[in-house]
Every structure is written in structure tokens, then in C-alpha cells.
Length: 566
Image (cartoon, rainbow, N blue to C red; front, side, top):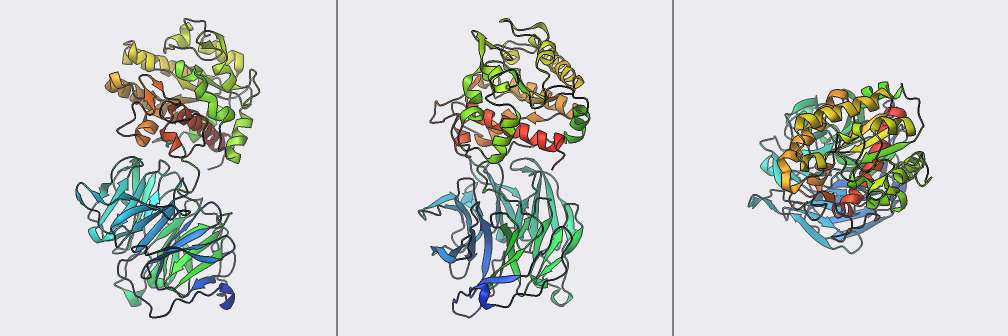
């Protein structure tokens, strides 16, 4: 995206692709495309930018000099969404269906309700300083937003609840910005350099040292135009980098290898995958909007109903595939082992009867035997009380030593539970009472390590839950959670990092909203454990958050480990 624009002196005449000859099909890049001809869908604009797709087949884009945001519906019909856009540039649809926009002239990051046209200012400064000119953006799974400001050589991060912070400085006009599909890498495409930069993400808003992913191809006749503009990517992680001086998009693998160029009649400024199947590449290029069918499928950011679980800092797939090879138990049985936060009915409310499930959610819950209400249904086993505060696989007050000694209310030992249910996976919530009752960190680490080894020996996959923040003993809680992460990393085990999930959504005001003393919240603050899992609702109910995360984490593990899919 550019701050300085070459404005075409022409009236705004919008024409359909039907009035333009399609460009001859070029030789496709294997597995990428094109899979059809390049078509000029609409033209007659001054300078197009910021294409963004929603989940209904609509695509939005900016015409910066004309101060407009346009919409193209699933049938290709063009309309004007917003007049007087204040120079809106980069766009993306968030989890609530709002259009998030870099409002360049006003130097703001805004959210636009596409139905009411109401505008909400998300950020207009940082540390008491002006924001610069926001240019391009990407929304992460937590609802946080990375965005560039080329005029002050900066990249910012705006958490879903908080203020913008500068995460990068001194870059050669950082322009396009995007995340890898697993959100472990932040890509920055500068307009003042040929180097495409890749930064490891330690946690949302905290990034590591850059490496050069690749160099942009150059036009020897335009040697001063080193850099690129906007970018998108597909589900395989291939990057589509716009290179205006070449009138082309440079396709690069996640390893940095250039796979080929896709050429256009005009200089491309940005691109995105759209259409209901995400197999059409929409390209903004000077006066026009182009489309081309692709072999590849696009990866969509922001427009999903809600986020996915935060990733581990290690890969668990290889280790867990070896473990899964030893499994001789009951397929689809996932038992939930824990204390009062597991026996609590709200924990399983969304999985059992909640709103807003995707087809993938429904499929994984069916695989888990949800609502079978028997020994195969882990949600039923953890909430059905056999006596007060004790169910088949959970008991209030559970401490790590009880995994081997048995619970005070009669909960069987871990070994007996594994023998009884022969589960494919075991989620474990254990530690808050160890923290509260003064159990030593060494004893806790030994007990949890022993429990993990017992599960692994049976060919079952453990899913460790970190402990929610305990306000009275935050430092000890952090130490115990660090121990859980270390144990998991050593063994290559997946983690549902509830502590990080809570802090990511509520960095400052987590207490009383997602956590109440040592328990999660249900509906105390307007939340509802069974509500649709939007980013907003997942900030209101701690039990909904944990229940939803568990479903998505189990689905992720099944996909990566058992189904051998990315």
C-alpha cells in the first residue's frame, strides 16, 4: 500500500468484466494456479487498495483518492459501502463481521459496522503520541490487530482489550503485514527494501528477531522501486506478494523459495482470497479490481466466528504420533480429569448444548460421543455426580498427589481411570489446590510428570491445562504453569494454555470477568456459557472459554496427529 499515489485523471466509470477481454491464461504454478483467465471485474477507479473478504462471499476494497470503500457481492455486483472514508486503505473483516480499516487521512484505526455504517475508533495514538498513518493490518486469533505505519517506519499491535503498542521501529517503510496460518510468524513486506521480513511470535504482541524470508524480484528498468505492497497467503502458507514495478504477484513458499510470478495488466497493490470457497484471488491494481480462479485455497483471517487455541512454542505432532501408534483403547473417548472447575456443569455447557457450532465443531463432538451419556461420553463422566462434589472422572479439591492416592471423596486413581475407560485423550486440570494448599513446586512437578508418563504409556494423548491466574498467589501460579509447560515441551505434549488465553483476552481486568477467586466465571458479568463463541462472548465467561477451547484443542490434535492433516 502507498502513501503517495499516482492519480489517474479519469471519471469514475464502473464497468463489468464482461466488457473487457480476459487476459490470456499464463502457465500455472503447480498447486497454486492460476486455474483460469485473469478477468477485470470492475474498473474506472482512481487507486484501489485493501481487498478484504468476509465469510459470505462479499469482498470490500478501498478507492483511496476518491475517499470510498466499495463492496462486491457474491454475484459480482458493485456498490458503495462508505463515502468520505478519510482515506481508508487496508481492510479486514473481524470475528464480529465488522470491517476494520486503516483510516490514513485521519491517522486512526477504525471499525466499521457494515450494516449501520457506524464507525468506532479503535486507536488514534500510542504512549501519548500520534499514531502515524495506518496502512495495512492483520487480525490474529485473539482479536488483536497488527498494523503498519510506513511514514514513521513502525509496526503496532493493538490487543483486543488494551492500547496500541509499537512492536517494531526503524523499518524501511513497512507496508504489507500478515501472519502465517499458525500465527507463529509475522510477515512484513516493506516498500523501501527488497527484503521480505519474518518475525517469530512469542505471544500476541511480542515478537522475536527478524530473518529475511526472501528477496523480491526486481525490474531493472525501475531500479529505485525495490519493495512491494500488500500480500495474502493460502492454506499451505504460500505468500502472494504484490510487486507493482513488475505488474505481478510473486508467489513464495513458507521456506522462502520463489515459486513463480502471476502477471497483471496493471500494477497490483494488494490481494486477497475470496468467494465462498476461497479459491478466487481478488487483486486491486491501480484503476481496477481483478479476479482469477486459483488451484490453491486462501487462508482467511479475522472473518471466522472466533479464534483458535493459542499455539504451543513447540511442535507436539511427531511425538504424539508415536504415542498414538501404541493406542489400543476406545476411539473417540476423551475423559476430563480435574477438580471443581471440571465437575462444574458450566464447563460442558457449550460442548453439550451451546450455540454457534461450526460443522467441524459438530463433527468433533460426535467423534467424542457427546451426549451419549455413558462411559464413552467424557462430558457426561466429568459432570455426573456419584456423590456430592464427585463425578466419575472429577472431584472438587483434587490435588496432584490424589492422582495416585485417590480422591478424598472416592475418585479412583489415574491408573484405574485409564483401565476403566481406555481413553484416546485425557484432558487434565490439576494444580490450583496444590497452589492454595502450599504443595511444593518440586512435588507438584514430580506428580504431574509421573501422571503424564502413565497416560503416555497407555498410548493415550494427554492435554494439559494450565492453571487460571489465582489472584492471591499469582507468582506461585506462574511458577506452577511454567513447570507444566516445561514438562509438556520435554515430552512433546499439547497444552491448553488457559492462563495465556485469559491474559490475552483480559490483560488487566481478568479478575471478576473470567476468573472469580480460584474458579472460572459462568454468567456473573453478562456472560453465558452456552452463547455463540464470538470474541466478545469469550471475554465474558471463563467456563465458556475453557469448554470451547477444549473442543477446538481436541479437534486440532485429532486433525494433526490422528488424521495427519495440517
